[in-house]
Image (tube, rainbow, N blue to C red; front, side):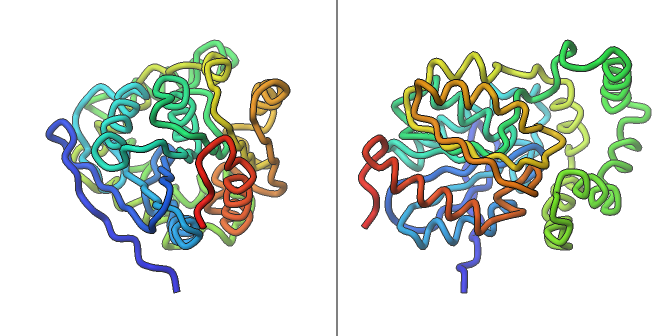
Length: 296
C-alpha cells in the first residue's frame, strides 16, 4: 500500500511553502502545473520513491497549500523559489520533473542553474506562462484581453473567479484536457478546488493571468547540456503535440528522448500514471551515464 503523502512547511521570503519528501537515494524534484499542487503527483511520488529515489514535490507560491501571497507573479519568481528550495533541502544535482508550466520551469533551471540539475523530465511542457498576443488570432486576442481585465477588476473579478472555480466548471474544464474521463475523480476535483477557497486566491489568479509569458523553450533548449526526457500526451488541446517539434529537432544533436503517449491529454502523469512512471524509471536507468549512478 502506498505511503501517505506528508505535507511539510518551509518558509521562503516570509511566505509559507508546502512541500513533501519521500524515499531515499538520488533526488527528483516534481514541479506541478497551473492550478495544481503536490496532490497532482499522488500516483507518482510513492512509485518513484519505492524505486530508490528521494522524491521532493512542492506547491509553488500561490498554489496548493502554499501561501496566496499578493505579489506580481512570474516564472522568474518561481525559478528563484525553486533555486532556494534546492539550496535548503537538496544540495546535490537533481532531476527536475515538470508538467505544463512546471515543464517550462524545468527548462529554465537546466539552462540557468546547471549545477543544480542532473537532467529533466518534461510532461506536456508549456510554451509560456500565458499566451503571447502574436500566438492568438485577432478575435481570440481581443477576447482574452477583455477576460484578463475582467478577472483583475475590483468590481467583477471576485464574482468571475467564483464562477470559474465551481466544482462543475472545474469538471467540465478537465473533460477538455483529460482524454480518459474516468481519471477525473472527485479526489482530483477536490485537489484543484480546495486551494481556491484560500484568502487571496482570486488576486493570485488575476496576477498570474496578467503575468509575462517568460522565455520561449526554443530560446532555452540550445543552452541545455543535460539529458532530457519529453513525454507528451497526444490528445492535449492546451499544449498540442505540434509544439513538440522544437524538442524533436533539438534531439538530433542533444540528449533528448521524445515519447508520445497516445489517447492522453495534458496531464499524463495523472491520467496514465503507470505508463509515465515506467517511462521515467526506464529513462533514469538508461541515462545513468549522463546523470548519476542509478540507485541500487
